[in-house]
Image (cartoon, rainbow, N blue to C red):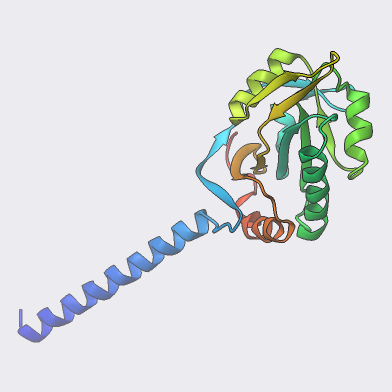
Length: 208
């Protein structure tokens, strides 16, 4: 092998290595959108099986999460500030993001007061497309734990009570798996931009 040929082979190998590195970085970037206001999970998390009731009193299960991206928020209808503020922002985000099929799902942590009918009137006041879920306390507790949401009943003077709860918004992909997490304070503009960036990564692909 001549010295010139050896140099050519080394140069070619260097170019191939550089192109391979560029391709790998491009692939990784494609698989992980850069979010400004949230955290994209390295691997989407499967939601455990559950059965709750929607605002019409019909069963709603994990299978119903599939088919379109979903924003999920846990709260309760008697919440004085965090819940209405968050749902108002999510209503704005849903309109601005213009993400095909995007759903917003409000899951109650207060099933004692949040019946399907109560939930329906509450969530539809923010957006007629919003869906609400309630059901058996143990099912809600297990689902909240699966999402990593903490909540606790706090008794108040006079026999009333309120609920302390996490104020995290979850983004589910079209398979119904948790793809990203957004923590407060939520910014409508930043969240809207993040959803647009994430849109190509939210399509259904493979089993849930």
